[in-house]
Structure formats: structure tokens, C-alpha cells
Amino acid sequence: MIAALTMVRNDDFFLGKWIEYYGNLLGKENLFIYVDGEDQKVPSCADACNVTIIPRVAGNVRISDKQRIDILSARAAQLLRRYDMIVGTDVDEFLVVDPALKMTLPEFLYAQNTTGRNSLSGLGCDVIYNSEYGSLDRSKPLLGQRRAALLSTRYTKTSVLCAPVQWGSGFHRTRKGDFHICKGLYLFHFGCADPSIIGQKLNDKDLVTRGWERHLRKRRRIIETLPSIEWRDWEEWTRKARFIQSIVRLPYTWNKPAMFNLRIKVRVPERFSGIV
Image 1 (cartoon, rainbow, N blue to C red):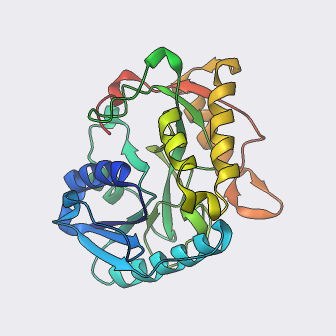
Image 2: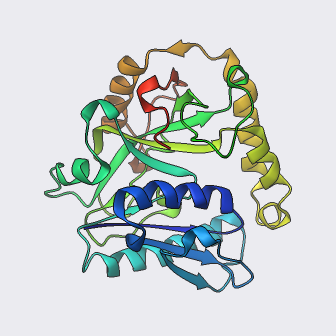
């Protein structure tokens, strides 16, 4: 069996999407949600999931992110005693198998060779707001409404644990072992999918106090600069990006993918529409 876990605070919209997506694939009884803070209310969509409310993880973004991932890593290690693999993502991230392969996420993951590997990764796709697609209708699937994406090393994460190892902050790496970026697997991040999402977070005093303002304004700049970036072919550049990220590492982060600072804008194919 495969379980999925996440931690959330003040984000019912993406939590609902996360539960719907991973619940349909893995079963809600195999979803483990950690709510950051006893002041939080758990939405009804999480009723069939395993929900644990934990004391507020305080501190600035760097310190609190490390504390949160330590909690999730410890829980993943416990879950691996009865599950074969653990999917770990933020609530705005979705691990998606290319529909052309005609496989579900569990089928795909079980088909992978995990010998000697402690994690599996999808190629990171940062989905960006593009004015040609208009405002986001939050009641509808996200993919299809949004087609523009940047191929991103930041979102090529160690999203699937096959062994009880420690994640680095934000699931960006494991502290032991390198990446295996699976062909046909993608991690879609939707934090930049609409200006309203960023604006809502900028109005969250809790996030700003913890040091998120700089990061959120950076997301705004990505949206603003997107039109100036040339479109590239999805099939060609996802293949190239996967190859580059599989072999290139920065000297000071030997187990994080790099891509020569290339900014590759692609249009997500129509076959992905409606999946998330």
C-alpha cells in the first residue's frame, strides 16, 4: 500500500484539492494530514482522512520549515512499517503520471525499480498564471485552466520515500541519497497559478511575520516576467530537463538537481487537462 502525508495551516482551498486528488488515487483512509496549530479548524473534506492537530510550529520560515519536515520525516518512518511507500508533498503540489502511459500513480510507482534507492521524484513543473487563460475558477480542475509552466529544479523533489530517511526542508531532498527522476512522472506546483493566491497569502499576517513576504513577492515577479520567456516544446524539453537534472549538481548542494539556471517555459499538453 501507499500513503500520502502533508502539513497545512490556513489553506483550505489547496487542502481540499490535495485530499480529492490523492484520496481518489490512494483512498482517504491512507491520507495523513498534520494541521499546524490548535487554533485551526479542520474542513469537513478531511473527515475520512487521518488528521492530527499539532501544537503551532513557531519561528521564522527557515527554522519552522525544518521543524515541520522533521515531524513529517519521523511520521513517514513510522508509516513505512506498514506501507510500501510514502508520498510527501505540500498541499499545492500534485504528483502526476503522464496520461499517455495509461497508468495510475500507484501502478506507476510499483512499476519502478527501487533497489538501492530511498526516494523517487517527478520532474518539477511550476504552473504559472498566464493572462491568456483568464481568472482561475476554483470550483473546477486546475490543469486545463492553467497550461503554462516553468521546468523547475526547485519542484523536482524527493516526493516519494521508499525507505525511512530524513527529508530536507520542503521535501526538496533527502539528507541521505541522491535523486531518481522518473520518466513520465511530474510534480505540478500551483502556488503561482493565480495572482489571487499570492495576494491572499501576502494578506496573511502570520506568513508575513514568519518571513514569507520575500518569497511571495518573488512568485509575483515570476508571473510578471513569464511573457518575456520563449515557449519551448514540452516533449523535447521535459526529456532534456530530466537528463540535465539527473546528472548536474551544484558544488555546495551535491544532492539537489541543477539546470544551468535555464528558464524553460512549456505548455502543458491537453492530455493533462482535468487531472488536478
